[in-house]
View 1 (cartoon, helix red, strand yellow):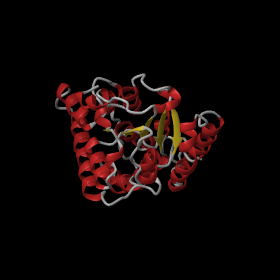
View 2: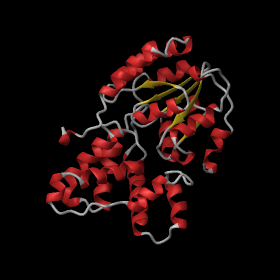
View 3: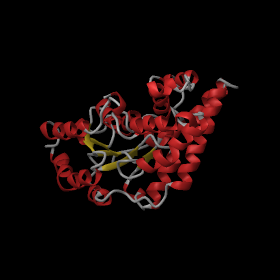
Amino acid sequence: MSDAAQPLRDFRPRHEFLIGIDSDGCAFDTMEIKHKECFIPNIILHWNLQPVSKYARQAAEFVNLYSTWRGTNRWPALVMVFDLLREREEVIRRGVTIPQANALRAFIQQDRYPHSDSGLKAYMAEHPGDPELERALAWTTAVNRAIAEMVHGVPPFPYVRESLQALQGRADMIVVSATPTAALHQEWSEHDLTQYVSVIAGQEMGKKAQHLALASGGRYAPDHILMIGDAPGDMQAARANQALFYPIIPGDEEASWQRFYEEAMERFFAGTYAGEYEAGLIAEFEQHLPSTPPWKR
């Protein structure tokens, strides 16, 4: 864990309840624009996938938006896109060389450095001159630049602000995200939402499960911790901390937030959220995120 996580280590509870909130695709409708306009064009450009751009786009959209891997950190998601392309018949017939990404896999598999841009740079200092890592750094830098130029003026989903206002004074709230911290601060500040959260935790502070673990630190009862997210990774982070999970269903985000505001929030505080109610929400959530891509069905 890097020193970037110090705000989480220093966090001290003010209430009996803790709520972690994911950002992209959960609080803000930014997943589609970031991936379709920023990530994917730069995947095609920087990894020489122009001859199979159609299939690269399909693979990247499936991994990052429409599958059980939605919300995955950008590095394993990128490798997964390569793997899907490498086995697809249409790509094989075109004779295009898809990156094996062995150097990136090694970076992902290590835990000494976070899976962030700063983590990659530190890792590269120990593995100098690797062309694949240099290309990866150029790619992620271009993605961040595109996001800074493209993604602004995107408000939170309806009922997000109302929910944060209703939670204020009743629960401690932190942002739990795999997005770079600088982008999170920009988005939450742009819409005056930083006033509601104690910490904004991005990819530099570690994985989402680590965010919750550092913030909670055994200071809350497990059923007093709730993670709100739109991806299975958010649910896994909650479960790793014996916490509860409230799903924001992709494609049905507004209704999900309305249900949280009008119903689930009070169940959480009343102690009636866990069990059958939570299980029903999760079952509905999982139906929306398949593990098999459409071209294999």
